[in-house]
Length: 123
Image (cartoon, rainbow, N blue to C red; front, top):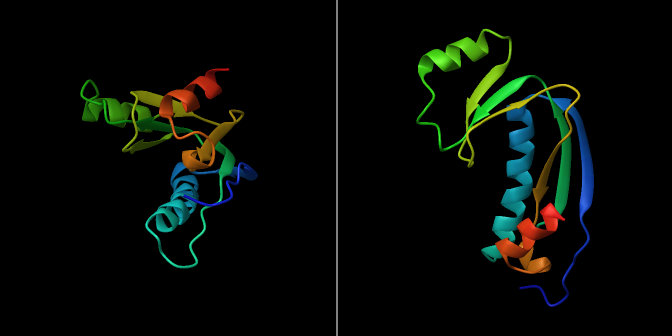
């Protein structure tokens, strides 16, 4: 863990973009944290909040057993993209006019507890 904890969070507005483009940005920021935690030289993860407005998209998480290929086809026919993700949850729609926030944080810089983090989000 860092000798001096950095609790600052940079906010980056990505504007409107497709889900996969925004996912790629998220993964780049997450990789910086993972590289730092694994001890790679010169790696530095910056606590970041990415703000984005997606083009119409449905995402389905790891709890997807109730959705069929027919459901996927039907949703794509609405003109929205459709992606299976490695995240929790069921099905989610994101679209124009909806602000989506993706926090990419090293909780050790704050208080390393998922319970604390979820409580802070709720408050």
